[in-house]
Image 1 (cartoon, one colour):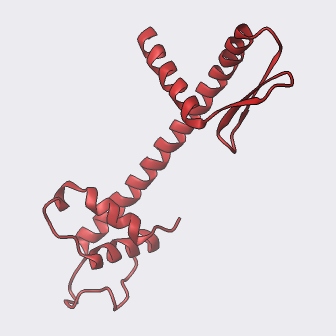
Image 2 (cartoon, one colour):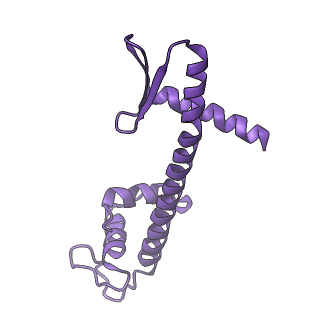
Image 3 (cartoon, one colour):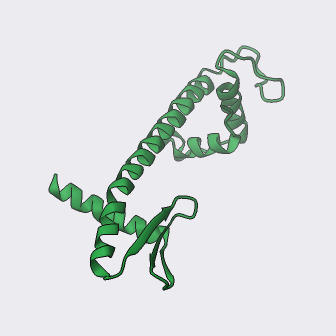
Amino acid sequence: MKYTIKEVRAFLRGLEENKYRRRYNIDAKRIHHFANNGVDSTLPLSISKKNENTTYARDKDLAKTFIKHIKEQEKIKKQHLRQEGQVRAILLPMIREEINKLTEAKVSVGFSNEMGALYVSKGNQKTVELKKADVEEIIKQYKKFKSKMD
């Protein structure tokens, strides 16, 4: 996977050691090069330091921690997506039951992942659309309820 200099800069901005230090673009470019091409690769002349004896140990170490940081973020993102899918699978039947209880006529309920909306239609009447934000609010309330139960 190729990383961008923008991602590296954002990572450097978040480090505690760079909190009060000026961050230079050339440092981000070196870390970017080591992250994309491997720690053992040689730097091109345009981003190498003037001193020939430089080992770039700090830059190589930051490249390794940057790659670990990115992999950890991806793992967390996958975990959140999986949990969100499980919560939706639990909530959708519950929402259908509640809507069916509230109305006398048959109600069809559908969820569109592309649009991120929940559609409710009753007979020949207009379709009611719950926006993604509304569904997310229901999911938040469900998580609070579930955490209280545990």
